[in-house]
Image (cartoon, rainbow, N blue to C red; front, side, top):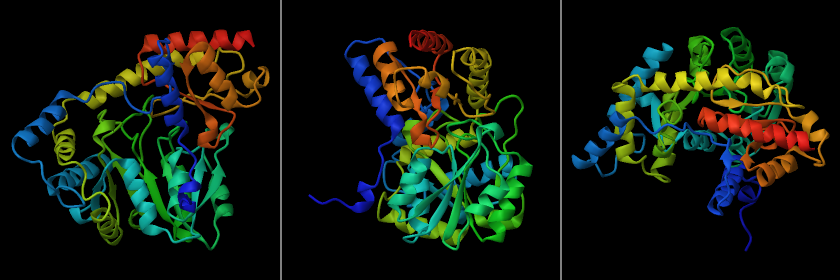
Length: 392
């Protein structure tokens, strides 16, 4: 059978692949420690679960508007005003089945075949694939490790062509955990305004910041930038609701309307009980977000220095998210393995530690370690990694 060329062009998710392999080994009885998780290891807070349960008991089990429940859209508007000083109306909000889906919907809505989208590396694994599925062309701009994996205004300017439609900015970043400052975003924003580029601002890790780092949305910086920006966020990381699949976009009403039309023919609407859970997440905060953030910061503080003591590892301290992204080129070069991907496979097979190779993030010399796991498990994993490295 001949498949769609767009589907054939997709590279499988490296994070899901390593997670699946680790699960397979666990089911075979092996003591596997997984550091590949892209989700908090805490359960969803009880008050959110109870709100979703109550909604079902109250009969809220039918279709909702394609763009989401009016009450949830209003709660999102209130959140954006409170947390980000951004004023939106409900007509400028669409709720989707997770931030991944909302990103995919954006690209399907704004891209024509051949349009270019600037993607800053290291990048989240799904950005390039989503752009390709939508007929676009990913254009990569490398965030240098010596610049905290962040790009400069000059680099972005050099990448712009007459086919460039949009740029994706992810701050705090998956996989690096680095955040862009207000000044850095202002410079990138100037390039976007000068070239009439749409800005897709992925802010899903907004609530997970450490060492007094501050989250700034590029949409906050000026009315002109707000007009050019589609803010993407959701409850998955902040409220440990990855499986609930609730994300959203805030932006220009004309774009949001087209996205809603698309949703009406694809997903109909996000699960109604999950939407009620998200309403509770944004209106009944009981301190759970801060408790999780504080726990992640404690883990980062305790394990960061240890990572840099592993021979051949060099790691910069992230300001957000829950990942470490060490450069392991020296360790790999001293091993029998030719690539980081091969090294990662051997680490899983021999040491029973699952990490994600950097190839899928556009950074083949690095690996991603998630500290969304217990401190004891993470420290045990580092012991195993160090023993594996020392055997090479």
